[in-house]
Image 1: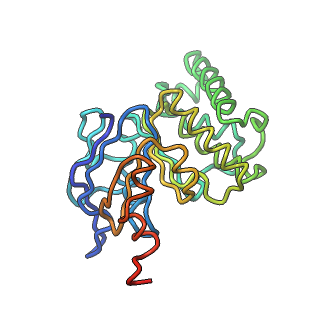
Image 2 (image 1 turned 90 degrees about the vertical axis):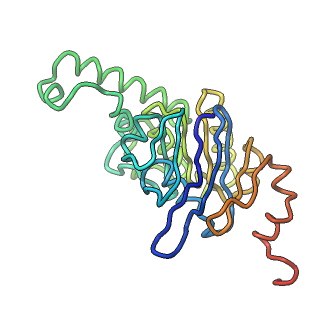
Length: 254
């Protein structure tokens, strides 16, 4: 088991956004978190990367307890993250954005950079080459020197994934990577997720596009009002009456 949570909870005042959720993330698979708006999906992702500290419960990654650790410790442990609202540097080129994502892997400090020491020059050369490789991996090689503020929205979604990959995460959390994309762009995201798992990156996906979720996910967890409603394969979840009711409402309340 790559990651597991034990009775993980997060409350804001008197509201339990995530309530005693226990899940297991298997290495090399695509796991999806789905549920109606307000179900606690993004809150759970924020817990899994250290943005929020849990009210109670534990987060174990490769057997290591990361509960309550800072975000940079989650990142250093091997957990990457993208966001529903783009978090890119619009005043930088695509290449520079990805190079920033590699800062955790660069041992040379500020003094070495300021003095342009040979070790730092070699390190920067490797960083640039790795960033170019990642841009090619996500299909953005032709945008290498383009400022982010001149790139289309669909390309920026893939750029954020490339930047997250810069730190070489073993687990990548994707928060609505297909939000706002057209069908062609969504198919590109689908193919990219498949390439990620093929490259050995485990994916946890929050997404409202059910066609994408059902097509790419190995395992799905359904949340409702902060609690785990059910989990299973796409077929099992699709036909679960509890899921149908959570999304569509029961006949009595319709």
